[in-house]
Image 1 (cartoon, rainbow, N blue to C red):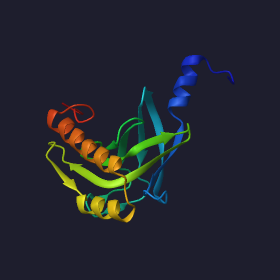
Image 2 (cartoon, rainbow, N blue to C red):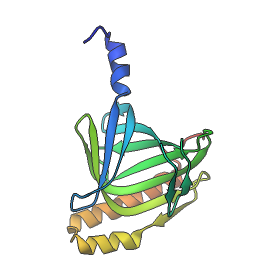
Image 3 (cartoon, rainbow, N blue to C red):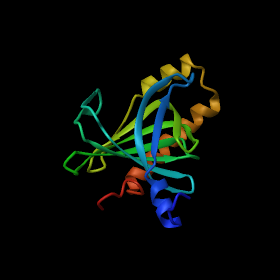
Length: 173
């Protein structure tokens, strides 16, 4: 193990770089970024990433260079959650994606984004966004009935988690 004891190897592994791929239902890559694996506990992977460049996002506004994204991916759930912090460290907001459960091969985490999202403010008020995009892509890509149902169930589960302030929406509480 190249001279590392077991504890050091675990820390080194936890800090490994991961490529995150967000894809459309047809498999086409939509976005890609680098992150670090902070932890893995059963089906939950927690990653962190810093924005290398300023990003202008239609819903999120301007994400400044250095914005931190703590990302929660469950390998058995139909959603993921991003917790954004300003470069100064203050909580900016959460952004939740409804998606097909991701796959992770140890280096690349890939998921199919189903385009329905929830934008959550620091006070945990929220708005569901892009339902029209979900419907348009469901028709375009002919999402099977089980995918449509799982997506709606995931949306309801996220809303329940937000309203109950359950992990990961309990940061700083």
